[in-house]
Image 1 (cartoon, one colour):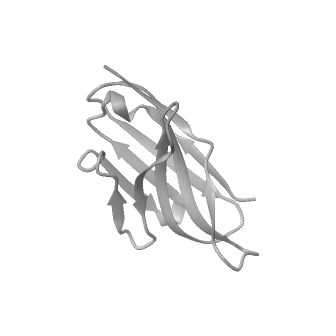
Image 2 (cartoon, one colour):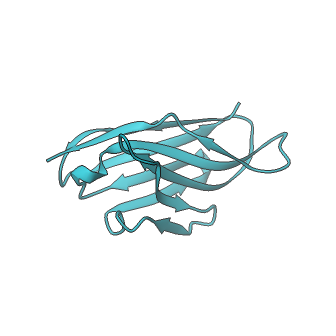
Length: 121
């Protein structure tokens, strides 16, 4: 079975930094786009950043210049470097990947369990 596991969340003061990681495991043929989303209490899940298999990136306007997404294809891992954190960045962060399994004809989306990021003022 395909599984995504996030790590690196925690509590940090405003202006601090965190680095999130997400590693994919299982019977995988290929991984296309990988990205990060976040959801604050009582709010919808919002897009944060995405990176394609070729390394092209896109960011939500609220995190441009502060967050950097990257990936290591040999390790099936995507990272989110979060700098200059603000209290409004507080949310559960979810890893997302577009994956084709060994027995799959088409890709499907997989989600991690989420990791809590809390930024204090």
